[in-house]
Length: 360
Ligand code: NAD
Ligand code: TYD
Image (cartoon, rainbow, N blue to C red; front, side, top):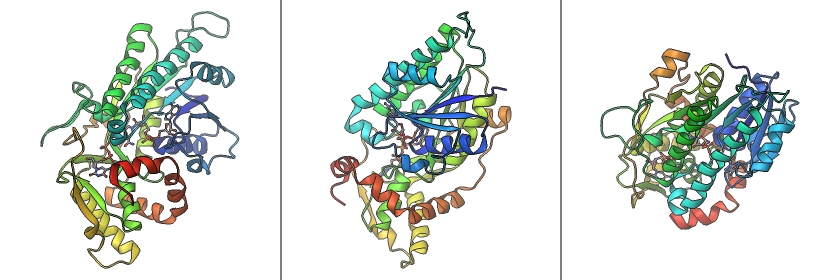
């Protein structure tokens, strides 16, 4: 069992990262947690109010592409474990502007690996360390496997076939992480997870964007015919899986994480409309009136579905809540956090929104 003492989490001010940070800080006071985040449009310290005063939590604003800044953080905090989540993460933005994705997701990951290898390769006495007690955990996506037809599930050795600039950049970073393991014996674990949902997700991804639009009675832009399928996982279940894999995953191994919870977009959207009509006290069927079928996303992957049996049989992880319950909790969170929505959408993100969908 790996026992982190000084844990660096990258991208901890983002959606999944903020849940991962909260989990480690609040549930493991014996672990010192350092959150390194550049605070792009997607990173927000308001996601971390629950931990900002905790004695085992430190925030450092830095870019993972800045090797000197990363090396200084590793040294200053004597980091023994990294959970790497920092990335550009939204497919539509990667279509709009791919270069930032390649730079952050590929070069940022390589820069982190390089700095960790340098810092970890000698022990306190200058001798070769064999990387004892060290671990680099790379968090990735199921989108690296490409697109499924009506049948089948992604398993850990499904050949990579990424098809968007986002997924290609994540696939490249996965390969680079594995190459450090095979070439240098560098201690890595990886996971590839399906679509997450829950509190603090930036309102650009399907579920929070549509919740926000329904709240404001704006149109719901459904790409194509709405028949694409995604597997949805409650973000706190992802954070729990990450902890198990960080502690108990075998070095060099990859674990798929998924919710066994496939939905066609249009069915999910109708369910969301139904829940929101009820919560907002609106007439039944009124939110569905906002649905607009719009031009399909370029290169839109048809279906993602995960076989997470390796993770459940080897490490005992399973999703904890049903989708209907998670979705309702998510809606409740956004309805109670209108100020947060206002704050995160008021900055540079507005430009992208208007290019993508027109004005609200
Ligand atoms: P997010 O976009 O909400 O957050 C990304 C965070 O990374 C932000 O806080 C941002 O400020 C930070 N960041 C971006 N570029 C940086 C840089 N150059 N240096 C330092 N920090 C930087 O993303 P998310 O949805 O929370 O995803 C987190 C990770 O999980 C990503 O690696 C993503 O590929 C992976 N993932 C996401 C999903 C999902 O459904 N959201 C599913 C599977 C895997
Ligand atoms: P998204 O949340 O962007 O995640 P990903 O593309 O990484 O799976 O999109 C989920 C699905 O919803 C995907 O099939 C695209 C679709 N979608 C829409 O139909 N309209 C939208 O405005 C958005 C953002 C997504």
